[in-house]
Image (cartoon, rainbow, N blue to C red; front, side):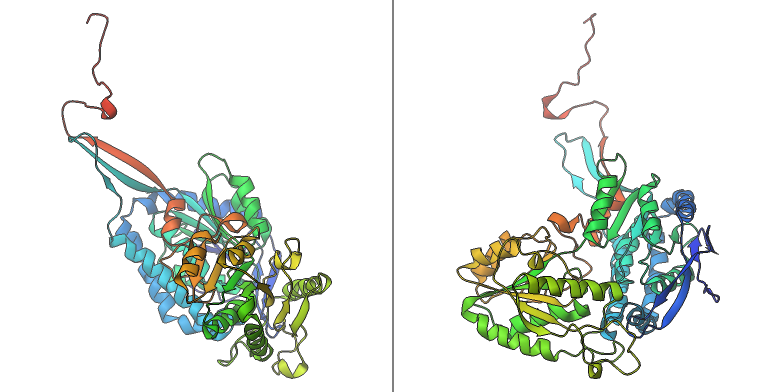
Length: 509
């Protein structure tokens, strides 16, 4: 059920709708500046209508069996698998990450739907022994209702399905606001959901900006908000919903992630992991590493090899299979990157690689209007008040920090940030790895691997400023369902636990 005419519309209650406003916005290719499409911009009134449609559809959708709901999602899975190459190219054209990452974004979405739909035929709930032999005790889950999904531009297909696949299979209905930078990906996903047979009102999409996202958060009919994005926005959502009876949120935000390279590291693994962590997706992953904390015994060799790779890493057309780094997503990211590079200089950094402004020869022909940057690498002595090693940049901006001493010192530096999303350690000493495992303040940790991603069956979320809950995998089930602890008496007598008397006495006794 495609929409042949632009501007593209919202999808609400089974219909494509212009909405309450004629205002539109455009999507562009960050590698070329090419216009990809024009979209109607949602207003709070449009969100109100979408939430109303989701609320009205909830009872019928929840009344279906778990397996029947999953069958609908299996159709979505096949849409994603059949159209992986097509949608992967659209991801690359709209958010700028290189083509293997574009395809992987769609594959990850398919894996998430597969996991959620497959879970329908797995055992559910917990049978809990009772103190009383005649009682059965067990857990049951029920869907919470309307779930609002607010998703980012850097994983414009995968992350929406982290949120929506589980929410829908569990019996909730959805109102989704894609990122304003990637509305065309949102459009294609909406068409897939319709073609797969998701009933009217069960899935709704409103295209727009922060005011539309805020309207989802503010609507009291939305039982749960699932959010992946910036810490600034996530904390505002938490302030709005925190402590509100009957409402909740699962929030995954950014990080100032680090890799620890100890004196016991295999430097080949360390180099590979660091380059992947710092420069893949042009540093625009919430788990990207902007700090590399390296032991003094291996620091000079690591620095030399890392700098050589950063100088040569292939920046180019993201549709080219040989490209390692594509553009950043928009001009705002270019400006932020430059601002933090200047800050590092002001704070005394020794700049080792400066490809902030690429030579004309490095920019692909026909891509002069794209948002191009290359790696920026510097070394700096650790100081707890340096902003450049504490504030998230979300780009290929990397600090090398030398440390002396034991693993405790490395982890102390690693943890000195308000964030706590992801991190990695590279070491051949299992005691160092286990110390990091037990003391690193992160929600996602990796040993002898890049700080990149997570498999869909693992929860994806952080601690401290980086998150509250995990809006993915098994953890998101907690966010979108209510648990009931159910106890059934199989006897005609009533007997209580803890020795509580069940005798009823009266004055006549």
